[in-house]
Image (cartoon, rainbow, N blue to C red; front, side, top):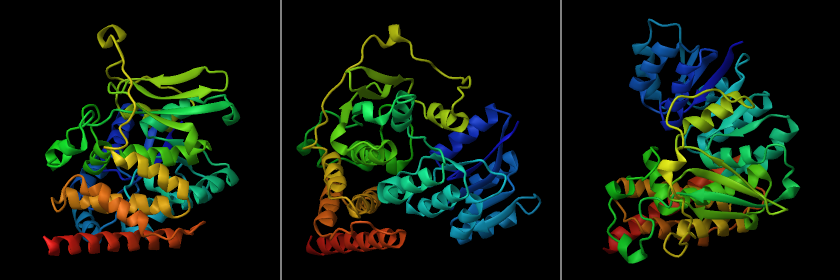
Length: 388
């Protein structure tokens, strides 16, 4: 029996690893692919996987792709209309939502309303719209399966257990490339330094987020929505070896954990075939080789991204959108070498301090808040540059 899937964000890190799993499981069929602007990578994927529909967010990318694949049967669309068409394709069973940014929210909602299973790897969807997404998924009786390694680990550790019995979620973090450093040591960090993650191979933006601990902050907010657990019950534990992907402590003190090598294909495959566990090639944990695992408290004074996430979820409403959007824009400026590493925190803090919270924001208000934050960051950066 073929399982038919679609991938939003097929040329990114999660998307390409999902397609590796498709290569190794002949009962998976790709019906549709969507990407941002990388039409060359998309052409390769179309020629290998022969989807019915391909969508490029960029109009230029769609035009180029149409020309390059006109000898195939794949239809090409562009923009939000294309993403929404993928989300409701009749035959499609599982939507892998791995597209970066808030553009992932609308197609995810459309797919839930169409009764599709969601393999969720788009952080922004729950961080900004968890109050809309989770009740909708429950109402439509749709499975929302986390693809993030930490959330997948929590999900696996909670199988068969009611959330009322959970006393604490222990969300693990590698600590990133600057673990143990103090603020003064981070003043001259370069883009190259921030992109050297010790354990995981990821895209540039998420790798920088891991180095600031903002990524862990976003995961705390996601965990609150995914598992219905209040933020004070979510504790971040630095575990440099990245073998324990997260843990759940229950009311009796018992702790369930999910362990494995740091390889994103494991949580992706688990989401695609849940509740089945398929064989998978690759290195397995060798405890004799590992010999020891260590744990530390996160340094939230140096790596302020995590502390600000708890402040954002505490304020609630539209504040997590501000946290997410300010970080997105600040990281973009850092990757363009326009600001220093520590200025990422300053820009996020400034955006949060200047925001008046909307308590139950609609999708339109979430997107308007995002735009307002982008403009605020742009103004802040421009004003600072003029004074230098």
